[in-house]
Length: 116
Image (cartoon, rainbow, N blue to C red):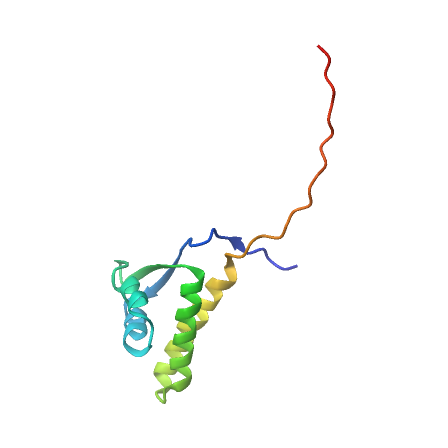
């Protein structure tokens, strides 16, 4: 039985939690846009955890750049760390959906004539 994904409204954001080290790896070693970098830099940080809010398309972009850098680096430790981050982002994308939910069947209503 497939689990249902949580539906988000267009533009709605979800929280990606990263350690400070993971956030630094992303901002230092990937070619993400300045906007994504700013989102990470200006996110809340508490107890060493950065809570960055992104739309699903932004997360997809972030996962792609992180995975690409992991595939291109010769540093095995960095590859492992970036792969783990990319996998976590992908898992978050599997929980949520911003696509239109399937159409529900229209139930017919019965009309009742009420006399006064």
